[in-house]
Image 1 (cartoon, rainbow, N blue to C red):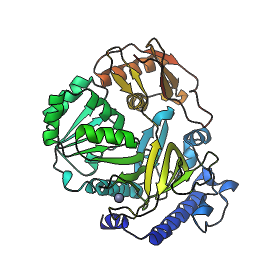
Image 2 (image 1 turned 90 degrees about the vertical axis):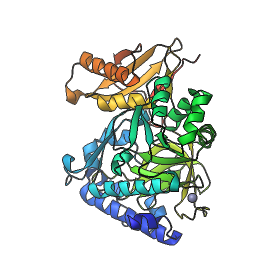
Image 3 (image 1 turned 45 degrees about the horizontal axis):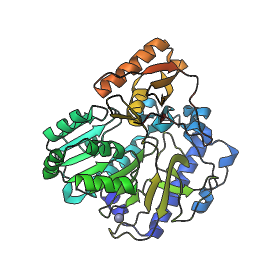
Length: 417
Ligand SMILES: [Zn+2]
């Protein structure tokens, strides 16, 4: 743990050396043990520097699924010996990411470092309300053994969410940025005043926080916001410092910013985020394209941390459908359904201009389930998560629509009042 805390203050030269050594180790392992990398495009010898490493092809989720997830796994790791995260993300395609024990332990230590960055505002015994779209993944409080917490599903009616939160008199609140913004919109001024009497800090997670949403949340809650940037495929990627800058966890990931062709852009220029989690051995994903856009900065931060900074600009998931009661169901809830309903390979959600919601499900043939059963389970999961029924047409699809970039449009709504 001490070395994880110290790493964030190492000088640039040392960090670059560590990164290069980490990337060499990951490439070496992947070439020797993982079938997908037994390919001439990865035959570049030992990379001499980071530019050399950037000559490797990029991977997108669609590439991994098309080639077969198993081809990206080291056969030495059995499924019950790794931590499995199932993701659908906003592409609507379900991928099972494997993380080996050492990498997962480093991820947990990095999360403690993340919460420590909030200083006195958060203590392990703080009263905390966690808004989540679905009950999956390893929650950070489980990782560090925090007992006082309250989980609230983010698809519940906003009155229910506000009342449950206030009942806890929370000192900290955690949730996806768009869902917290939605919560603020649903609160009366006396409720907000009551919340502000106890609240010390807001943590955001799993989704990018643009400067605009950060400002709305800071103004609304009246406390500092600490963001985390992560992905199921890579675990922890970056975390906020007290200056409000997002630092890349360079002791576990290498982040590149590239243009549409995959070539690196200079620091300070916006581009696509490509990440290599170089500690991963169970399922290494080298140069993994995440679909977010960001700018990278390596100049000094006033907080003293030397890890490079990212400024996220465009993200994956703030799409939603609007229910007849005027409330929103965000992409995250549908992602939860896809992950938790056995036999769903892919899905997408469409709402037409009249407000009709259609859920398209691509069945996973391997599961061998009757489609009517699948549709019934999916509908029941969504209604349960939302705490009330809503009209939903569930239909069968053979594949989901993808854009040219290989990214699915997961939730598209043409209905706005
Ligand atoms: Zn900083």
